[in-house]
Image (tube, rainbow, N blue to C red; front, side, top):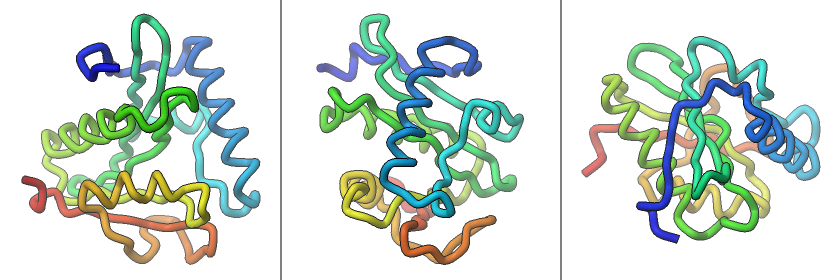
Length: 160
């Protein structure tokens, strides 16, 4: 699959396709994380004004999503990165992450942070972020130390 075949667009989170995709994402997160360690946002939480939400489409089919939350005028948080199971490992996550980083730079953010899982289920996610230069950091925002969570951050001026 070529990245030229992928369209990324802002989504209002009202379509049935995104509701289905996010429910699958939340179900998966619930299946691998204890309730107190679940940080994935549902549709209502993603509709907050401080969050911009994008969907990825391939030939009219929803294949993934990602979001950017403004923590303050210089710091953003990546949320809800997800690619459908059948298309993982094909560069779609990388494409969405590049899109989000580009948007953060346009907004003038100096730092991007995220929370992802600490278990083996999240090795690929942590590898994706590390490949962009994200490094493990202490909890930020409302996150606390949690053996099931890994917080990562990236200074945008490091990007080449």
